[in-house]
Amino acid sequence: MTTTTQILATIGARHRDGQPLTDLLCIDCAQSLRLAGVGMTLMNAAGHQAVIGTSGALASRLEEIQFDLGEGPSLDASRTNRTVGSDDLNDGVLLRWPTFASAALTAGISAVTAVPLSVGEVRLGSLSMYRSSPGHLDEHQQATAHAYSGAAVVVLLHLQERIPSLDLSLDSLDGLHPDLGAPVAYRAEVHQATGFLSVKASVGMTEAMLLLRAHAFAADRSLLDVARDVLAGRLRIHPEESEDD
Image 1 (cartoon, rainbow, N blue to C red):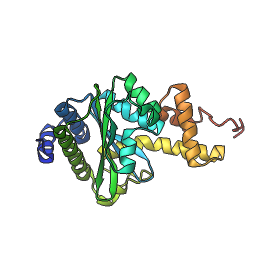
Image 2 (tube, one colour):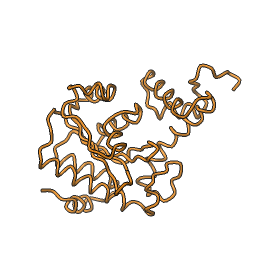
Image 3 (cartoon, rainbow, N blue to C red):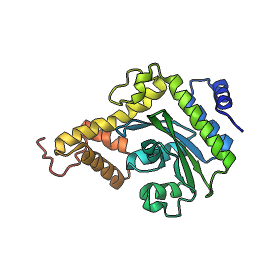
């Protein structure tokens, strides 16, 4: 059975050319369990998140979709601190994650397992494993999946210069290792745009985020691109905003 120690030794030996340990862990996990993709997400208590590691483009897109939509297994695993998923995304999951499940199926993903990453009561995020065929993980695969989640936590702790930063306050990047800080900074623009829109449209932060997501979905654009346009003044979303604002 693959152990956390073995996983760390393997990715440590491959750590070269500046490739983040978080990516290496996801790649190794995907290869070991013969998965279609693996993604690692950092998430704080307020629900702010950033994709910090993936095995490739497919996993990256699936993680980003969940952020854009505000739904999916990666988010639920982080929020509940429990393993969540579906052995068949065609089987009733449309009621749980309607838009994510549809997007995943279109991308060729039929099953997913998301394992929470935490240290005691401190919730760090999740490690999500995507499969191209329906079916459940057997006992050996489940043990291996949890070994990778344990290794992911060790990697996060290793990358941190200060343990207090693990509250993941995304409003401040102080203490975040560059491998973690870059994705967080990338996502900070979305939260800045949410705050900006909240003031301009006189709505709460939740409503402002919903406006951003709705526009991104309707325009078939990423949430980040929409946020950047809002911050740059190239896009006005709320219909009550006047041209003189």
